[in-house]
Image 1: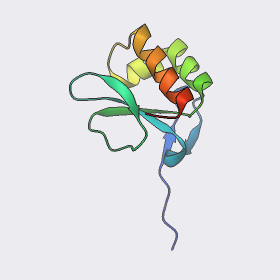
Image 2 (image 1 turned 180 degrees about the horizontal axis):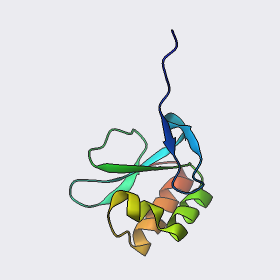
Image 3 (image 1 turned 90 degrees about the vertical axis):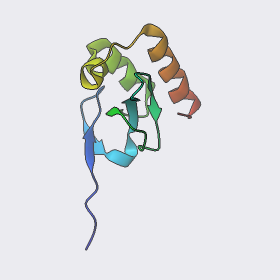
Image 4 (image 1 turned 45 degrees about the vertical axis):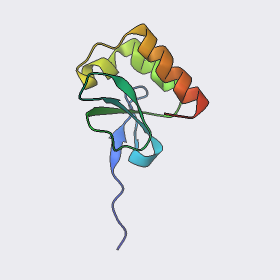
Length: 89
């Protein structure tokens, strides 16, 4: 029997995709916001496609802020975009 693959919605393009194909953005317990490519960091999470365009859409719609229940500053979005483009997180 094949295992069910969890689905999550991208906060940018709003499409449902396999969880492993998305990048988790997490608000940790100390309030910092960062990328979590492992998906195992403690904290509240939201998902975006590994595409800087989806991050820009989520930024414009403020969907990450609503989902993470936190204010996200300009510098945090810039850092997330750099990390996404560099392929680390």
